[in-house]
Length: 128
Image (cartoon, rainbow, N blue to C red; front, top):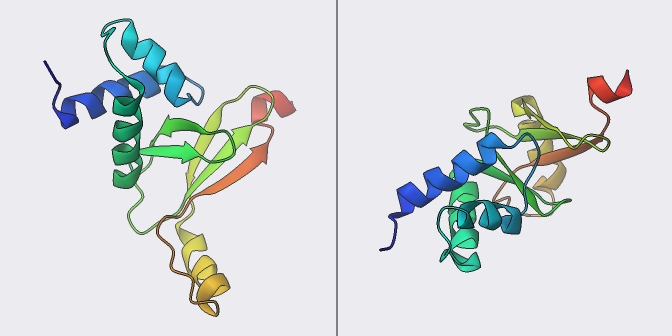
C-alpha cells in the first residue's frame, strides 16, 4: 500500500531530524528500508524535492546532502554553516542579506528561484 505524500514527507523529516549530520538521499533510503524494504530511490528523491520546494528541508549543494529546516524562513535566506571537521550544520536566518543579494543580480535580469547560502569552516567546538 502506498503512503500518502504528507506521511512520506514526515517519515523523511523524522529520519533527517534524528541525525546530527547531513544525509544523502541514499543514506535516508537505507534508514527507511529498515522499516519499509520495498521503498525505492525515486520515492525518496521525489519527496526530498517536495520538502526542499516547501522549505521544510535544505539541500546542501556542496555535499549533495540534506538537512531539515530548523528555522522559519519567510522572505529570508537560510545560511548554513557547515563544519568541515565534525560535519555539523548550523542554520541561521540570513534575512538581512536578501536586499544585497537582489542588488547583486539586478543588472543581469537573473531570476532567483531559491536562496541558500553555504559557509564552510569550523564550528565553535572544533575550533577550540
